[in-house]
Image (cartoon, rainbow, N blue to C red; front, side):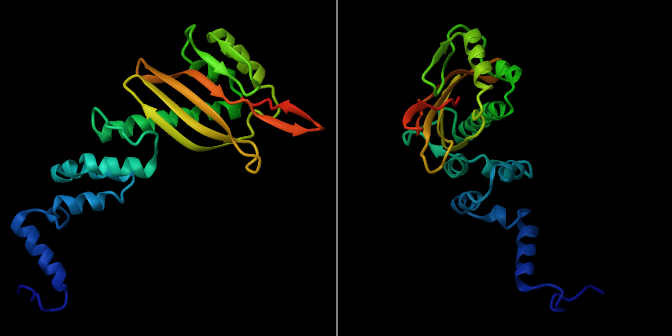
Length: 227
């Protein structure tokens, strides 16, 4: 005997949804107008949006919508310039920005670990790289820059900092990231700018500039030894 739909096993909403799916072959999500779908997708994070794009062709089209990735970009990152119009669309620009922000975070992980070999792999090995430490000293060329980090890693407070207000701008094969670094949240930040170039499938640092930070102590003003 065929079960009765009025037996209480199904609600009216469930019956309606099943009828729509049988009639069109599409779920209720797929029946939404594009504007509502885009708004719904704006609540997803990066991994969820990527997973959704692999479910079926309709969801792949929706998850690849440029407006969805633009909304996600504005949610996850601080826009460096309001006039940005990505040449290859917001999805590609989101991926590039995410990659450079992760690369920049790796730079500070290397500093905390005081790893000179890792720092050597991180910088592009060319003669035009530059490094400006917070001591006010500047260094040019790969070997000189590496020697400066060898000295910096011996400083007592080199790894004692917090990074805030990270802003990235990505071009085709160049990117720069600005941020504020705090040794003491009450004392205020010093400004840091990192510049990267893209070579052989990965980002390399070519320029690091930290503003000179002055502290008061013992009746005299001293440079803080901080990279």
